[in-house]
Image (cartoon, rainbow, N blue to C red):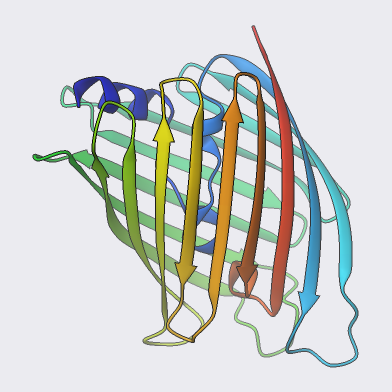
Length: 240
């Protein structure tokens, strides 16, 4: 358990920020390194008339150093940047923040992972999102998202995760992220699902092996928008 908590804190696993947060890939980038990322994205307009599906091929460069990181988004979906940092207390509990600014939206997040007894780590997440160019006139432009959940460790590195997120677009609506991660300290395989109160269900999987990773996901109403999104991600890291 102690080894696992040390691993988790080092990898900055604060996690899943409402839909997109739920599939945070921070655990993939644990060491001091530069990571090159390629995303193949398909956005499907399920609820909007007279709109076609859009295909994007996004690229990003991420730099991790100690307990801080920065990302430059260079794709044709949105360009922009992201930065984050965290620290640990004597119990190995994590406290962190991250900011992401892109062409059409910006978001600010704080979070904590609190080490509890019995192999549990409690999670609290708060995020503010401002959308400058919503997809439809009825979409909200200011969103407040919160999450609460836990990790349950069963071994040094393997763990089960469950996190509840409110849906800021409509009172009483929510999503629950559930996933299981099998890891050995360097590599891991994660498989998860995102059941929602409106009947939709998303899913995601990620495999990391040495300097390589690949992931696939399907997010209904991605970022609380009118989109259904499918994403294939591949990456390669170079330590320094």
